[in-house]
Image (tube, helix red, strand yellow):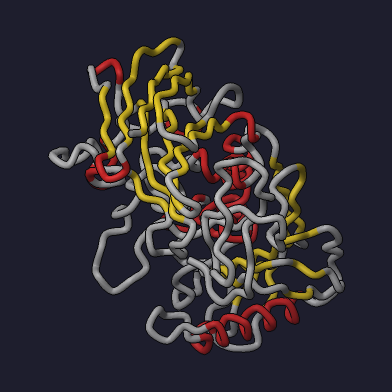
Length: 377
C-alpha cells in the first residue's frame, strides 16, 4: 500500500520496442520513462531507519528485535531477486525515540487514516530522532514502531520527499505497522517496491475481490505470502535487473521461437513480450522452484497481461487464468492462479490467448529452460 504521491513516472528509459510508455499523471504504473525520482535499484541503496515508541506504549522490546524482523531478510530478498545487483544497507542509531503524541492520536486505523495524519507522524518521528545521526547518501526512510504500539496497524508508504534531522533529503518514507509481524520482512520488500516505482497488483476497490485476484501468488506486489513471491520479469526489467537483450519482443504477427530461462537465474532470455498495442502486452516467463520461489507448488511457463494505462490496484498486471477449472495447488497462498504455470513434464504444452489471437506451444525443456513457439494471428 502507498499513500500520497506527486506526479511520478517509471524508473527506466523507453528504448526497447516492448518498453511501453508510462501513463502521465498516474501514481504508479507498469510503464517505462526517462525520468524518475524513485530510489536507485543498482548498487548500494541506503535506508535511514528511525525506531520509535510512544507515551502510551513505551517500548518493551529491543530495536535489535525490530531490526532482525525486517532488515536482514529484506536485504537478502533484494540481493537474490536482483541477481546481486542491489544491496540494501540500513543506517540507524539503533535506539528508540519517543514520539510527542500517544500512538492512538495518529488515527492509524484504515477508516480514519489519511495522508495528513501520516505526514504529521513522519515529521514527529524525524523531529524525535533529531540531527545527531548522519544519514548522508540515504534515499528512503523506514520508521519502525515498537511492537507495543498496537494501534499502528499497517504499513503505508509516503511517496513524498522528507528532510531528515541532519539535512539529508530522502525520496520516500515507509511507515511500518503491526502487519510486519504477520508478513515478516516481505512487507519491507513490498513497500520498498513502491519507492522503486512498482504499483500494487492486488485489488484496491470495494468489490470484495480477494488479494490474489489478479496475480495469485506470483509476485510480492500482489501477495506477500504467495508461493512464488519473486518479482515478475517485467518488474525486474523495469528495475534494471534484466537487460534489454534478455527480453524478446514480438511486434508483428507471425510465428517465432525462443528459449526462455527461469527468472530465478541471471542468465539467458528472461521473458518474451508480445506488444499488442501502445499500452498493452502479453508477457511470458518461466518460473521454477529455485531462488525465492522454493515454495511454488507449480512450475513452468507463466503468461500475464501488462496494461500501462491501468493504475496501481486496478490490475495493471493480470496472470492469465487459462486453467479456469483448476482450484489452484495452494488456495491459501495464491488461490486458483497458483496452478497457472504450464508444466511441460505434465504434458501442459499448448496455451491459447483467444482475445489477442496468441497461441504458445512448448516444444521442449532442457536444464529448466523452456523452448517455445509463439504464434500471433
